[in-house]
Image (tube, rainbow, N blue to C red):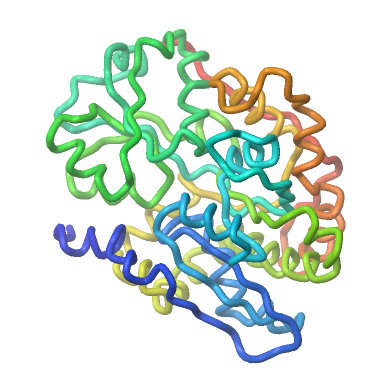
Length: 360
């Protein structure tokens, strides 16, 4: 068990580190990237840095650790970052011109993390199955996170009317308080928060998103489309390094060693007990396959339309093709896969998306 101080240290004490920067040794090219910590999707960025994978391509990475996704969006819009860790819905909404977000033509070359989400309920709750969520309040840290969209997909598949469940935006740092003070009955969130709260005895797992939508994307490696056009070789080199790291993390044989390395070096992860970190980022919850399948983007975009996060007249497939640089990614993953044994290479830009749930 860990105490409240350790939890706060792991989840929100990094606020004072929002501009902490960690660089590899001097080299010929420099990139700036903003990542959300201590998320699972940031792990490929740190691993590529710690193991010198970027350095081999002559790239110096300046990594900015941020504890709120909205601050990454602001930094990306201002030009503080060449690359950014952004949720899948954000990349689509920013490109399509959502009035609540900066209008930026975003290009993505890689999925940084897949799966990793948990729908959990308070240990005080009487919820035992999905149908019990009727009339309940579920916390989400953003309406523009993949897991919030997945929650609505879950409602559809389980026969629940989304109108019968209240979604309440709650910052991750306030989720414990919200549960303890009965402001919400449960939440859906990516790891490691669900594992930490379950270990604290304040929540219990109702459903892992991995068991609902297999290998769904979480956060993506984003840059501006103009940067891809003007610096294509640099973008490919950066993507290759992060894909190698993602493929390593996605391999069960290598994952624990890689997470342990990051835990030893990167403070926001170091402040979480290693056994809990390994549990949260274990293969039964979290994965890292890096290829950006356009079929996944189409599902996300269509769900965003249903929820009013994209305009109804947006051409879904065109938007996804514009944002998902999957052809470039296919070139790169063929090179990256040669560096990590056992890695799979996609045969298409699309795949059969497996979404399954019996009514309860």
